[in-house]
Image (tube, rainbow, N blue to C red):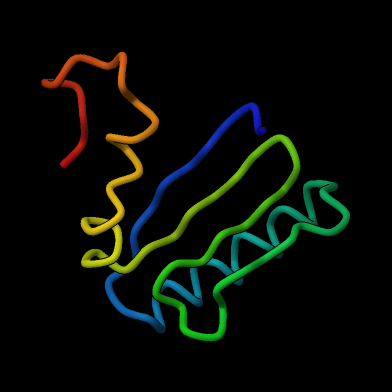
Length: 83
């Protein structure tokens, strides 16, 4: 498991791919040697595993479908969940 999970959205496949590319480069500059990346081929949902941090970048429709916020925030009050 990771210490932190980040969930973000891009507006299109190109935007998701660009955000993911930028994050991978930023992680490398920050000292993360080899972040693992999955999903860049289609760029609907890109997963970046940087060890202690896992980053998900979604297209909005895909983010709504999988709804990871609800899955990982079972103890969070309903009014604090992001829609």
